[in-house]
Image 1 (tube, helix red, strand yellow):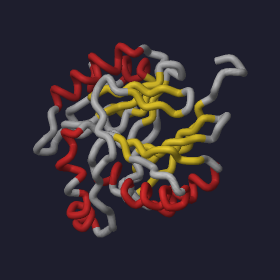
Image 2: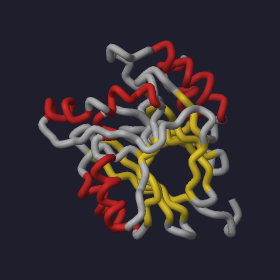
Image 3: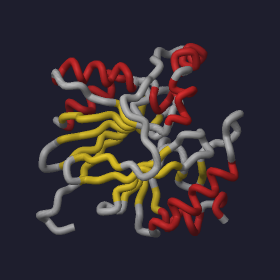
Image 4: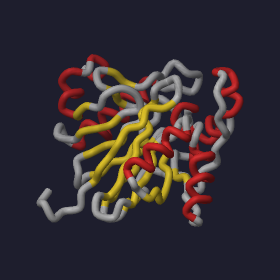
Length: 221
């Protein structure tokens, strides 16, 4: 991008005992921001928002698991109260509604607080989400969960992959609702064709590139 082009910035805030990568993304010119997958530890996320000095416009969810969505309701309420403007929760695909409705019960089993979540907008493949001049296309990539989505920014060659694809691995599918074949198909037909130069952030651990995973990920050979 040229020096005059709008720049997309980001910061990762690890949250919950699962060390989930909650991500704050913002436009460098306006400081308008989104928070992606606030799984918990809301005070820590709020500290991260304060340190970056951004104004959060919406919360995005890739899927309905506790460690990705457990703090979404509380974060949305706090940010809305502070700004005087509703901060909506958007995503995932509605096929994860049953997971979002069971967050509190699941969290109790792990011994930390979390609240159920009802998004203001469900997202489906073909939808777009805007952050100022930055456009993210929504792809439905099921397998880890039925309603898992990823966000793709073509201009920045960047993907928010959630728990679909990891450095050297893929998302778990050993849940009753998991589907290994569907996950592999989504990666091979929707993510790999984007191009080897696309980088991605995932739900846990370090990010990678499509090219590195195409050649080195043992689950994709």
